Image (cartoon, helix red, strand yellow):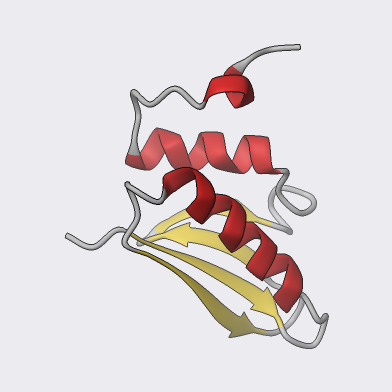
Length: 92
């Protein structure tokens, strides 16, 4: 089974670089667990991160763009539940 994350971003809002940065963050943390991270052009202010049919992050639903810590924790809970994310899991 292929583990593929999609990042759909609004082309009209010029969020390609934000999407690419999020992709880099995901890949640098989950390179062993993921097969692919795809950037998907969209419109109407969309910025969503999905794993198959699971919506991990939605800019409108979650009221803004994802911070790396929370996004990585959400992804970890889906693809590597027992994995320790080191300093990301530490409470401050």
